[in-house]
Picture 1 (cartoon, rainbow, N blue to C red):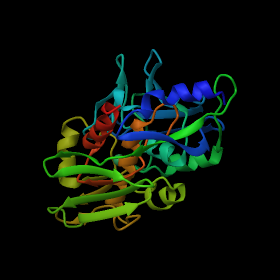
Picture 2 (tube, rainbow, N blue to C red; picture 1 turned 30 degrees about the vertical axis):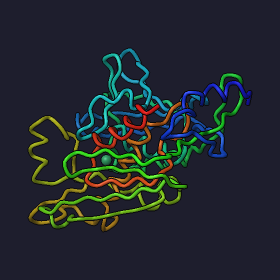
Picture 3 (cartoon, rainbow, N blue to C red; picture 1 turned 120 degrees about the horizontal axis):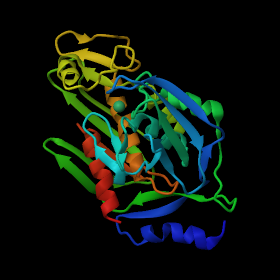
Picture 4 (cartoon, helix red, strand yellow; picture 1 turned 90 degrees about the vertical axis):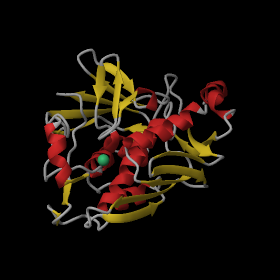
Length: 312
Ligand SMILES: [Zn+2]
C-alpha cells in the first residue's frame, strides 16, 4: 500500500480530540461475489430486492436507488428521517429501513459494498432480524478489497478519547472510552408488562457474539400502537411473520420468542446499524467505546453519530 494514499485518507481524522483513527490490524474487505434477497418492505408493503455487490477498497458502503440509479453513501450525511426506520436520501432518491442490513454488514466486516434496491425504495424486511443477511454474507464469503491500483487498504477504527452523550427527555446514549466496542442497552415499557424493563450488554464487534446473540432478534411492535401506524400509512408490510407483536393486556401475540429479552437485543441490532453510519471510506463505523443507551431510537442513535461527525 503506498504510504501517501494511506496518509491522505486519515489526515482529516487524526487531529480530532475526541476520536482518533487507528489501524484494526486487518485490511478492508468486500463481498467475494454478488448476492441478493427479496421480500416485503416494512413501510410501503412493496416487494423489493436488495442486490449486494463487491466494491473497491475506500468506497465504503453505498446504496443505488431510483430511476436515475442515484448513489447514496451509507453515512450520516444522508440521513433524512429516522423515526420508525432510518432513511437515507440524496437528489430526490431515497432508501428506507437500511438499519438491519447495515448492522449485519458492519458486524460481519463487509467494509466496502454496493447495495442496489429494485422494486421500491426500501430494503426488504425479511423476518425482521438480520439473520438472513448474515447467512447470505457467510454463503458468499468475504475477500480483500482492492483499490484502483490493485492494492489493499488498512482498515481503521475510531477510538473515543472522551466521553460524549446525547439525550432527549428520559432517553440517552452515553459513550465512554474503552479498549473494545461494548454496547449496553436498556428499554422500559411499564405499560406493557410482557416487555417491562430489560437490559442487555455485549461486545458487539466480535462477529461470533453478533451472530449468536444479536442477529436473529426481530423487530417488535406494540399491538395497541400498530393501528395508529397503519392509519398513518406506515408498516403496511408489517405482519406476524416479520415482527414480534406484544399486547399491553395479553402479552406476546406470536410466540415463541427467540430470546426472553429479544426486544432489547433488537435495539442493539438497530444501534449497530445506525452507528455504522459513522463509517467513512471503508473503515469501521462503530466507535471503540462502551456505548450505553436507554430508551433510544433511530433518531437518537443518529444524533450520536452526528455529534461524533461534527467533532471532526
Ligand atoms: Zn429494527
